[in-house]
Image 1 (tube, rainbow, N blue to C red):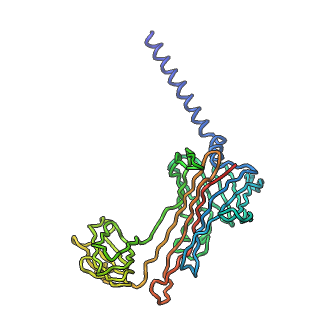
Image 2 (image 1 turned 90 degrees about the horizontal axis):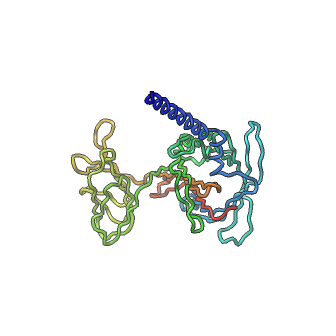
Image 3 (image 1 turned 30 degrees about the vertical axis):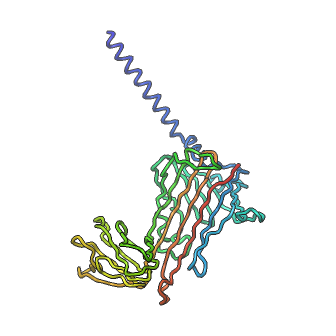
Length: 348
């Protein structure tokens, strides 16, 4: 009888514990609680501001040169309204001044932050981004650019039309951000995209010995050498048996005694334990070609960090594409795009 009583007591205890845990889980998943988690890292209140050190990458001289311009930026929440869908929106005005702070602030536009049941969305220049979503946990993935048109920036990127495919992800929820010498903990990090298709730059000198290109797939040689440049490379991975070399140095370069002339490019393939010229075409015939133009390249990067009780403390958004203009002049290439980096330096 005592054994039966003990068993009944134990089962009753387990049942109570189960329903207690279930109730706690329901509280954790409760919408008001979840929305509070979003507003915790994206606090929205009229009068709140964040000041940033802002670095802006631009391309000048008909897109042939690049420059970085430095500013102090202040984003201030100066309005709040309910839209037709019943969602709360906040208007943020952006002010800029020179990095030295020697000139007065000037207005640099406005943007809007919308808080929905499950997201925080930002609309700027009529472009709508889904910045944050629920559940707010590491590994959550969403389409942050799902509302963008096909060519949101209209700068003739090859990849511009695929921005809506970018998958945002919470890559970290416990990152650290150093602010005025003090680390801020529990930083939420969002990565929207991190793609780079850029040649590895290798600089040769008069005293350069054999140059090892192991692990590389696209190489840009530059510099001044006193003699023919000898290149070496170990066996590549099975998924990348191709090595392309573009020689913009003053001397020919050779890999396995196959020469890349000055101002030319050549592709190699690793076959039967050695590097050989060219690649096979659709018919299976090996084709050897020399290229005069540098290869195209591109970089897409979007990383943002949010601090509890503060909001966005860091952003890096880069989109550019390197293209040859085919003017008949070697290396007459341009970069089209932009880059911006913001790092919080003050807030209220």
